[in-house]
Structures are given as structure tokens and as C-alpha cells.
Image (cartoon, rainbow, N blue to C red; front, side):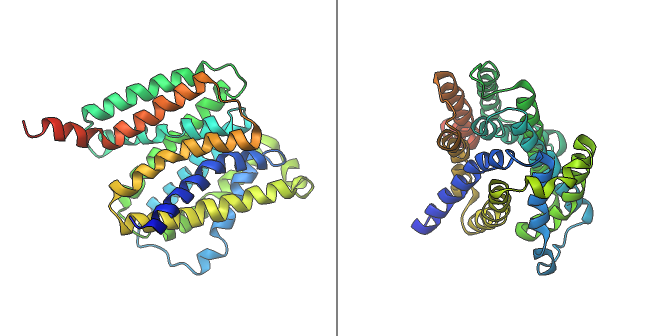
Length: 293
């Protein structure tokens, strides 16, 4: 990988990691569903007028938009609102990787090899440590909500695979069309009309920065660069950079919100990141050792 592309990959994982803290920043003044709804509203407009609809059945586009916008980021934002720290949210969301291969086995009949089973077991141990924390950075409902977001993330991965589209940028733009209205409806159902009446009173500089950061660096720029790298290099060269997302997530939460990083949190982080490494490289190592025997 060229040096510039290497640095770009690190930059994207940094942006995606610190985004969890930026979401929390926006929650100091805005309702979680309003915050997420505005994110996807600005992802759609005005770009949808200039980006051609991908040649994909509308069912895939709509289902991806609902799961990505509402099931993933709407619910993860709600989890942060309900008390899970930004750093821990970034870490727990990595369970989407493990849920993906489980769903792929169920839906796509893909085989789950021994390395993935081992990785999932180690990650579960890390999750157990996270749930046991009592430092104020974890709430049970927050963890459950982020795990629901992780499940939604895994379903979006399956949809992309089933859709077979290579134009992910256009796919995300058009799919985002199906996210804002359900998110705004959830805001109304949970908070009533006051959440809209008081919107401009609550819209401060922190909220504006949070929305713009989520729209442009995180979603549009991030996914465009990441998928460009996947197009340019083998996935095995690009995907491992994703291991940096939870690390940058914890770092961002520490720097912005002074999140305490104690021994249990370090151990839980190590277990989950180690599980991700086994998931990414375990099968290759196993085949290298035993495949030729």
C-alpha cells in the first residue's frame, strides 16, 4: 500500500473512532433521534440530485437505509444517550463483525471455521468484563442498545453482499433517503411535539458541529475513501485497519470526556481487539499450519 493511502486508511479509522465522542457531544443539546435524523437528512440532500441511483432493487436500498440509519446509528446514539460511554460504544459495536459471520452462516450458508468460533468466544469474555464494570461508563440498557446496533450492522453487511453493488457511495446516499422520516417519527413518539418546537432553541454550536462531523467526514468522506481503498487494494490489506476504530474510540473518549481507562477496561479492550485479529487472520494461519497436512 502506498504511503498516502496508508495514512488515509489511518485517518478514516481515526474519524470513525472519534465519531462516537462527537455523537455524545451533540447529545448534550439534541434528542438522539433528531440528531441521527439530521445526519442522514444531510447525507441525502442535496447530493441525491447529483448522484445516479445505483442499479440495485429498491428493496435492498430501503432495507439498508432503515437498518443503517435507524437500527444502527439511531439505536447506537440512543445507547450513548442512555449512558454507555463513547469509548465503550465503539468497542461493543465491534460485535457486528461476529454477528456478521453468524448471519452469513444462517442466511448465506457460509461455513464458520474454528478460528471464528474461538474469536467469538474470546469476544464474549471481553463483553462479560465490560458489563461487570462499575466506573460509571457502562449502563446495561446502553450495552444492549449498542449490541442491537451491532446486529443491525451485521444485517447491513449481508444486504450489501446480497445486493452485489460496487457503487457503495451512491448506494449509501440513496439508502439514506429512507432513514430520516422514521428517525423523526421515533423522536415524536418518544418526546412529543416539543422536540420539534424547541429544536432551534436547543441547536447550539456543539450540536451543529456534531451533525456536520457525522455527515461529511464520517459518512460521506469516510465511506468514499474506505471503499476506494477496497477497490484499489485487496480487502485483506484494507480490512485490518478497522481494528484501530475501537482504539481511537477509547482515545477520543479519554481526550474529550476524560473517560477513565482502568485495568478491566484495558483487558476487555485487549480481548475484543485480539478476537478481531483472530477473526481476520486466524483461518489463514490455521490453513498455513494444517492445510497442507
